[in-house]
Image 1 (tube, helix red, strand yellow):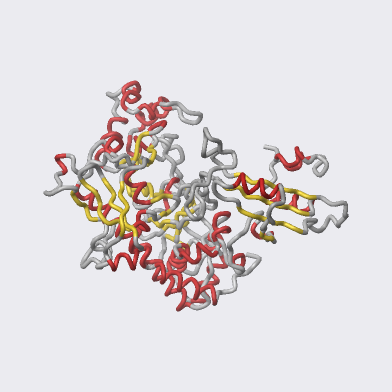
Image 2 (spheres, helix red, strand yellow):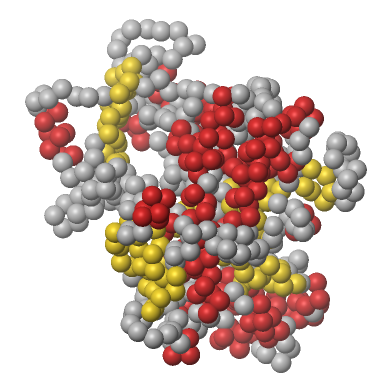
Length: 563
């Protein structure tokens, strides 16, 4: 698509064909070269970024809102004023001497613009000096001055793999292993016709550009199911399922055959994304095969170790003959200097990415590219950070109990969080439907895709003093139905995001009875309690994560700037 500005300003862009395919960074640089002054009025009203809310929580409709359509268009908008004088400058320098920016929020944007146009009030702009290293952003940025001197995540762990994409999740993925195995057995049964498969599971026989369902099934029926396997699958954060992984054909849309060999017990993976639709969300860590949508914008998974020989690596492979660390030359040099291990570096990266101070101080840059990680100068600081990362990893690993959180004596601050409760007197009977999720947390959308719903919850004041001190003064009761609810889920726990998802709400949307096909089992209802406590524990360690980040930032290892 040709940018609009050259169409409106042909004098300044007499031949704009060169802009085709140019990056946003390149276009912004060209505007800085062409104009003396640029003024940006950001009108906000963005459904995708701010949810059409102001920073203080009031409605923020778009500038195109009307009486009949109060929200206006979905995306945010801005007005750019571009000024060109007759002065001449060298082509080697940026012409722009003034770049100014301001936000306009809320319902009064029209009135404010009208007052500005009539010169009734002085305009309040912020002067910007956009750094080239961040792509000349025409926006106030929040980034630590040292951020660009730190290594990008792929500069530490250079090899990553996109997650598996099934495109037929309702058939190839399941919460229950036995139910998935039964479906696969029917798919491989010669006694069941293509037409019957299409009747039972329509999506499996819908032809696509690269998916020829009858040809694929004929081939697989002839070959048999022996090469495929049912295995654990990290589907969403805190949502571990089963997948039928098939190495041949396009039964799986993107099976990632190059990824699977590196998934083995004891290997850790960091699932992150390079770009973010909204604000940066902390990544998750897994030890199983991961889904492409483990991270909302598409997960890339960075392992600590890789299987196979490595001629370039001789640092750590002696102890692990079948594997070698996924390290760049620079990160190997760093570990040699500090005497630490690849796992230490991995868990330090995890701890850093979960620090609220790190995210807040570098929010703009973290949305635009892979995170940059400051490296501690000393082994002591690295190990201290890594221990925090290991704690996070344990809390994210739902297959293993955590003392004080889900096992042994529960931390008193967590004991009363998310308890399964009854609206009335008496106990809860799963056989009577008391654990059925019917409160509207999810529904089937187009193509069987699970769409989130509003659900039912009640917000109330937190009455427990210790919980109020730890998690704030608001808590929620989250309803399964009209009979049962999870009581006392702190608002910050309920709102907690990983990988672009509101974790607990996302989990519930897939368990709505109309989608799951049954009510929750007792252990599944109790899992929500466990999930809430794990998230609460992640929040409790945030002050330690911030302190560690600030200490590391104050004394970093000098990363080679040409790396």
